[in-house]
Image (cartoon, rainbow, N blue to C red; front, side, top):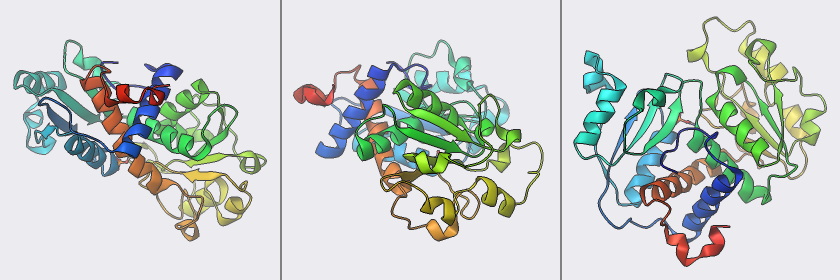
Length: 302
Ligand code: CP
Protein backbone atom coordinates (compact mmCIF):
# COMPACT_ATOMS: atom_id res chain seq x y z
CA UNK A 1 0.00 0.00 0.00
CA UNK A 2 1.78 3.15 -1.26
CA UNK A 3 -1.11 5.61 -1.45
CA UNK A 4 -4.68 6.03 -0.23
CA UNK A 5 -6.59 6.84 -3.41
CA UNK A 6 -9.75 4.72 -3.76
CA UNK A 7 -11.49 1.84 -2.00
CA UNK A 8 -11.04 -0.18 -5.20
CA UNK A 9 -7.36 -0.56 -4.39
CA UNK A 10 -8.11 -2.55 -1.21
CA UNK A 11 -8.83 -6.22 -0.73
CA UNK A 12 -11.04 -7.28 2.16
CA UNK A 13 -7.84 -8.22 3.99
CA UNK A 14 -6.28 -4.76 3.44
CA UNK A 15 -9.42 -3.08 4.77
CA UNK A 16 -9.47 -5.27 7.89
CA UNK A 17 -5.78 -4.53 8.51
CA UNK A 18 -6.39 -0.79 8.54
CA UNK A 19 -9.52 -1.12 10.70
CA UNK A 20 -7.69 -3.38 13.15
CA UNK A 21 -4.73 -1.05 13.34
CA UNK A 22 -7.03 1.97 13.89
CA UNK A 23 -8.64 0.00 16.72
CA UNK A 24 -5.19 -0.63 18.17
CA UNK A 25 -4.37 3.10 18.03
CA UNK A 26 -7.68 3.99 19.65
CA UNK A 27 -6.99 1.61 22.54
CA UNK A 28 -3.31 2.35 22.99
CA UNK A 29 -2.96 5.91 21.71
CA UNK A 30 -1.34 7.35 18.60
CA UNK A 31 2.41 7.61 19.08
CA UNK A 32 4.97 9.76 17.33
CA UNK A 33 6.72 8.02 14.46
CA UNK A 34 10.44 7.50 14.59
CA UNK A 35 12.15 9.79 12.08
CA UNK A 36 11.13 13.11 10.64
CA UNK A 37 8.39 13.52 8.05
CA UNK A 38 7.04 16.65 6.40
CA UNK A 39 3.44 16.56 5.21
CA UNK A 40 1.29 19.08 3.36
CA UNK A 41 -2.52 19.23 3.19
CA UNK A 42 -3.81 20.59 -0.13
CA UNK A 43 -7.51 21.30 0.12
CA UNK A 44 -8.94 22.81 -3.08
CA UNK A 45 -12.50 22.32 -1.79
CA UNK A 46 -13.94 23.31 1.61
CA UNK A 47 -13.60 20.84 4.48
CA UNK A 48 -13.91 20.81 8.24
CA UNK A 49 -13.74 17.15 9.31
CA UNK A 50 -11.35 15.66 6.76
CA UNK A 51 -8.84 18.52 6.87
CA UNK A 52 -8.79 18.87 10.64
CA UNK A 53 -8.75 15.17 11.42
CA UNK A 54 -5.86 14.58 9.01
CA UNK A 55 -4.10 17.50 10.68
CA UNK A 56 -4.75 16.16 14.18
CA UNK A 57 -3.61 12.67 13.14
CA UNK A 58 -0.45 14.20 11.63
CA UNK A 59 0.31 16.16 14.82
CA UNK A 60 -0.22 13.08 16.98
CA UNK A 61 2.12 11.11 14.69
CA UNK A 62 4.72 13.88 15.15
CA UNK A 63 4.69 14.88 11.48
CA UNK A 64 5.64 18.44 10.62
CA UNK A 65 2.87 20.18 8.69
CA UNK A 66 3.93 22.43 5.83
CA UNK A 67 1.09 24.91 5.31
CA UNK A 68 -0.42 25.14 1.83
CA UNK A 69 -3.18 27.63 1.06
CA UNK A 70 -4.58 27.05 -2.47
CA UNK A 71 -5.92 30.62 -2.64
CA UNK A 72 -2.40 32.04 -2.13
CA UNK A 73 -0.52 29.37 -4.07
CA UNK A 74 0.80 29.45 -7.61
CA UNK A 75 -2.18 27.32 -8.70
CA UNK A 76 -3.97 30.70 -8.91
CA UNK A 77 -1.43 31.60 -11.63
CA UNK A 78 -2.26 28.44 -13.55
CA UNK A 79 0.31 26.03 -12.12
CA UNK A 80 -0.85 22.46 -12.63
CA UNK A 81 -1.57 20.05 -9.81
CA UNK A 82 1.31 17.86 -10.98
CA UNK A 83 3.78 20.77 -10.90
CA UNK A 84 2.49 21.81 -7.47
CA UNK A 85 2.95 18.35 -5.96
CA UNK A 86 6.26 17.82 -7.79
CA UNK A 87 7.46 21.13 -6.29
CA UNK A 88 6.48 20.04 -2.77
CA UNK A 89 8.26 16.73 -3.38
CA UNK A 90 11.41 18.60 -4.53
CA UNK A 91 11.21 20.76 -1.40
CA UNK A 92 11.40 17.63 0.74
CA UNK A 93 7.74 17.09 1.64
CA UNK A 94 7.26 13.37 2.37
CA UNK A 95 3.49 13.02 1.81
CA UNK A 96 0.49 15.03 0.64
CA UNK A 97 -3.21 14.94 1.46
CA UNK A 98 -5.31 16.29 -1.41
CA UNK A 99 -8.96 17.21 -1.77
CA UNK A 100 -9.77 18.38 -5.27
CA UNK A 101 -13.00 19.02 -7.24
CA UNK A 102 -11.83 16.93 -10.20
CA UNK A 103 -12.80 13.25 -10.21
CA UNK A 104 -9.66 11.06 -10.31
CA UNK A 105 -7.36 14.10 -10.09
CA UNK A 106 -4.69 11.67 -8.90
CA UNK A 107 -4.32 10.30 -12.44
CA UNK A 108 -2.50 13.59 -13.20
CA UNK A 109 0.09 12.69 -10.57
CA UNK A 110 1.76 9.81 -12.35
CA UNK A 111 5.48 10.01 -11.62
CA UNK A 112 5.05 11.53 -8.14
CA UNK A 113 6.90 9.28 -5.73
CA UNK A 114 5.66 10.51 -2.35
CA UNK A 115 2.43 9.02 -0.91
CA UNK A 116 -0.83 10.74 -1.82
CA UNK A 117 -3.79 10.53 0.58
CA UNK A 118 -7.05 11.27 -1.21
CA UNK A 119 -9.24 13.56 0.90
CA UNK A 120 -11.98 13.43 -1.77
CA UNK A 121 -11.88 13.69 -5.58
CA UNK A 122 -14.99 15.42 -6.93
CA UNK A 123 -17.78 12.87 -7.28
CA UNK A 124 -15.19 10.07 -7.31
CA UNK A 125 -14.08 8.57 -4.00
CA UNK A 126 -13.53 9.49 -0.35
CA UNK A 127 -11.57 6.51 0.94
CA UNK A 128 -10.64 7.83 4.39
CA UNK A 129 -14.33 8.66 5.02
CA UNK A 130 -15.28 5.17 3.93
CA UNK A 131 -12.70 3.61 6.26
CA UNK A 132 -13.91 5.63 9.23
CA UNK A 133 -17.50 4.68 8.45
CA UNK A 134 -16.47 1.02 8.30
CA UNK A 135 -14.57 1.40 11.56
CA UNK A 136 -17.68 2.89 13.20
CA UNK A 137 -19.87 0.04 11.90
CA UNK A 138 -17.34 -2.56 13.04
CA UNK A 139 -17.20 -1.01 16.52
CA UNK A 140 -20.97 -1.26 16.71
CA UNK A 141 -21.60 -4.73 15.30
CA UNK A 142 -18.20 -6.43 15.19
CA UNK A 143 -18.85 -7.84 11.69
CA UNK A 144 -20.09 -6.87 8.20
CA UNK A 145 -21.29 -10.15 6.72
CA UNK A 146 -25.04 -10.02 6.20
CA UNK A 147 -25.53 -6.55 7.67
CA UNK A 148 -28.31 -4.62 5.94
CA UNK A 149 -27.05 -1.16 5.03
CA UNK A 150 -29.23 1.46 3.39
CA UNK A 151 -27.53 4.41 1.71
CA UNK A 152 -30.03 7.17 1.03
CA UNK A 153 -29.86 10.49 -0.76
CA UNK A 154 -27.89 12.24 -3.44
CA UNK A 155 -26.17 9.11 -4.77
CA UNK A 156 -24.90 10.22 -8.15
CA UNK A 157 -23.02 13.22 -6.69
CA UNK A 158 -21.67 11.37 -3.66
CA UNK A 159 -18.10 10.13 -3.38
CA UNK A 160 -19.03 8.70 0.03
CA UNK A 161 -21.72 6.49 -1.53
CA UNK A 162 -19.33 5.27 -4.22
CA UNK A 163 -16.59 4.40 -1.72
CA UNK A 164 -18.87 2.86 0.89
CA UNK A 165 -21.07 0.81 -1.42
CA UNK A 166 -18.07 -0.89 -2.93
CA UNK A 167 -16.28 -1.52 0.36
CA UNK A 168 -19.36 -2.74 2.23
CA UNK A 169 -20.21 -5.22 -0.53
CA UNK A 170 -16.62 -6.45 -0.54
CA UNK A 171 -17.01 -7.12 3.19
CA UNK A 172 -20.26 -9.05 2.70
CA UNK A 173 -22.88 -6.47 3.69
CA UNK A 174 -26.20 -6.18 1.81
CA UNK A 175 -26.34 -2.64 0.48
CA UNK A 176 -29.54 -1.03 -0.71
CA UNK A 177 -30.21 2.48 -1.94
CA UNK A 178 -33.03 4.98 -1.55
CA UNK A 179 -32.84 7.94 -3.86
CA UNK A 180 -34.83 10.17 -6.22
CA UNK A 181 -34.66 8.77 -9.78
CA UNK A 182 -32.84 11.86 -11.03
CA UNK A 183 -29.88 11.23 -8.67
CA UNK A 184 -29.70 7.46 -8.97
CA UNK A 185 -26.83 7.43 -11.50
CA UNK A 186 -25.68 3.84 -12.07
CA UNK A 187 -27.20 2.54 -8.83
CA UNK A 188 -30.19 0.24 -8.68
CA UNK A 189 -32.34 2.24 -6.30
CA UNK A 190 -35.63 2.20 -4.44
CA UNK A 191 -37.61 5.37 -4.67
CA UNK A 192 -39.22 4.80 -1.29
CA UNK A 193 -38.35 3.51 2.17
CA UNK A 194 -41.10 0.88 2.42
CA UNK A 195 -39.75 -2.39 3.92
CA UNK A 196 -36.19 -1.09 3.71
CA UNK A 197 -36.29 0.88 6.94
CA UNK A 198 -37.53 -1.97 9.15
CA UNK A 199 -34.79 -4.33 7.93
CA UNK A 200 -31.88 -1.90 8.13
CA UNK A 201 -29.00 -2.34 10.56
CA UNK A 202 -27.31 0.82 9.30
CA UNK A 203 -29.01 3.80 7.69
CA UNK A 204 -26.53 6.12 6.03
CA UNK A 205 -27.93 9.45 4.87
CA UNK A 206 -26.08 11.55 2.30
CA UNK A 207 -25.96 15.31 2.06
CA UNK A 208 -27.85 16.93 -0.81
CA UNK A 209 -24.89 18.36 -2.70
CA UNK A 210 -26.33 21.55 -4.16
CA UNK A 211 -22.85 22.71 -5.20
CA UNK A 212 -22.59 19.77 -7.64
CA UNK A 213 -26.06 20.19 -9.20
CA UNK A 214 -26.43 21.79 -12.63
CA UNK A 215 -30.14 22.31 -12.14
CA UNK A 216 -32.37 23.27 -9.25
CA UNK A 217 -34.01 20.41 -7.34
CA UNK A 218 -37.42 19.51 -8.76
CA UNK A 219 -38.78 19.30 -5.18
CA UNK A 220 -38.70 21.60 -2.18
CA UNK A 221 -36.58 20.78 0.88
CA UNK A 222 -39.75 19.80 2.71
CA UNK A 223 -40.86 17.48 -0.11
CA UNK A 224 -37.39 15.91 -0.24
CA UNK A 225 -37.38 15.34 3.51
CA UNK A 226 -40.86 13.82 3.47
CA UNK A 227 -40.02 11.39 0.65
CA UNK A 228 -36.32 10.58 1.05
CA UNK A 229 -35.20 11.90 4.43
CA UNK A 230 -35.05 10.19 7.80
CA UNK A 231 -38.25 11.51 9.34
CA UNK A 232 -39.18 10.97 12.96
CA UNK A 233 -41.71 8.37 11.85
CA UNK A 234 -39.13 6.39 9.84
CA UNK A 235 -36.64 6.55 12.69
CA UNK A 236 -39.28 5.06 15.00
CA UNK A 237 -39.44 1.98 12.71
CA UNK A 238 -35.72 1.21 13.01
CA UNK A 239 -34.63 -2.03 14.68
CA UNK A 240 -33.54 -1.79 18.32
CA UNK A 241 -29.83 -2.05 17.47
CA UNK A 242 -29.84 -0.11 14.21
CA UNK A 243 -27.64 2.95 13.84
CA UNK A 244 -27.95 6.19 11.88
CA UNK A 245 -24.92 7.58 10.04
CA UNK A 246 -24.21 10.64 7.92
CA UNK A 247 -20.76 11.73 6.71
CA UNK A 248 -21.71 15.36 7.49
CA UNK A 249 -22.04 18.27 7.15
CA UNK A 250 -25.76 17.61 7.64
CA UNK A 251 -28.64 19.68 6.30
CA UNK A 252 -30.90 19.17 9.32
CA UNK A 253 -34.55 19.06 8.33
CA UNK A 254 -33.59 17.80 4.88
CA UNK A 255 -31.63 14.53 5.19
CA UNK A 256 -32.46 14.00 8.88
CA UNK A 257 -35.32 15.50 10.90
CA UNK A 258 -34.23 18.33 13.20
CA UNK A 259 -35.97 16.58 16.09
CA UNK A 260 -33.45 13.71 15.76
CA UNK A 261 -30.30 15.79 16.50
CA UNK A 262 -29.69 13.96 19.78
CA UNK A 263 -31.20 10.61 18.81
CA UNK A 264 -29.43 7.75 20.63
CA UNK A 265 -28.93 5.82 17.38
CA UNK A 266 -26.93 8.64 15.75
CA UNK A 267 -23.23 7.83 15.28
CA UNK A 268 -22.16 11.02 13.51
CA UNK A 269 -19.71 12.30 16.15
CA UNK A 270 -18.40 8.82 16.97
CA UNK A 271 -17.50 8.56 13.29
CA UNK A 272 -15.77 11.95 13.38
CA UNK A 273 -13.69 10.81 16.36
CA UNK A 274 -12.83 7.57 14.57
CA UNK A 275 -11.60 9.60 11.60
CA UNK A 276 -8.49 10.63 13.53
CA UNK A 277 -7.55 7.00 14.28
CA UNK A 278 -8.26 5.80 10.76
CA UNK A 279 -6.23 8.59 9.19
CA UNK A 280 -3.39 8.06 11.65
CA UNK A 281 -3.47 4.31 10.95
CA UNK A 282 -3.42 4.78 7.17
CA UNK A 283 -0.66 7.41 7.32
CA UNK A 284 1.51 5.34 9.63
CA UNK A 285 1.02 2.14 7.63
CA UNK A 286 1.91 3.87 4.38
CA UNK A 287 4.75 6.07 5.64
CA UNK A 288 6.38 3.15 7.46
CA UNK A 289 5.71 0.62 4.74
CA UNK A 290 3.63 -1.58 7.04
CA UNK A 291 6.26 -1.56 9.78
CA UNK A 292 3.84 -0.47 12.51
CA UNK A 293 3.64 -0.70 16.28
CA UNK A 294 1.12 -3.52 16.03
CA UNK A 295 4.01 -5.87 15.45
CA UNK A 296 4.08 -5.82 19.23
CA UNK A 297 0.45 -6.92 19.28
CA UNK A 298 -0.08 -9.15 16.24
CA UNK A 299 -3.71 -9.89 17.09
CA UNK A 300 -4.57 -6.43 15.80
CA UNK A 301 -3.31 -7.37 12.38
CA UNK A 302 -5.75 -10.24 11.94
N1 CP B 1 -17.38 14.18 5.73
C1 CP B 1 -16.55 15.11 5.18
O1 CP B 1 -15.81 14.86 4.23
O2 CP B 1 -16.64 16.33 5.80
P1 CP B 1 -15.81 17.60 5.40
O3 CP B 1 -16.27 18.06 4.05
O4 CP B 1 -16.09 18.62 6.49
O5 CP B 1 -14.35 17.22 5.36
